[in-house]
Image (cartoon, rainbow, N blue to C red; front, top):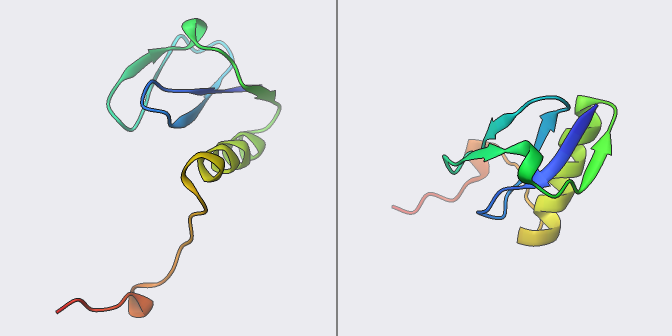
Length: 74
């Protein structure tokens, strides 16, 4: 089981059930039991997808591309 919650910076994060703390990419160490749990899912893949959806909801859609398609600014 995986729990999805938000860091103080606004980023959605997931953690395995039973884990006491989780470190966000912003650098903050989060006590999981003090967080409001947004969702609980069974698989890590589902948790990853849910975090991606929450991030897109808050910050807009993300897209990935290859380096040859990025415009050269020089």
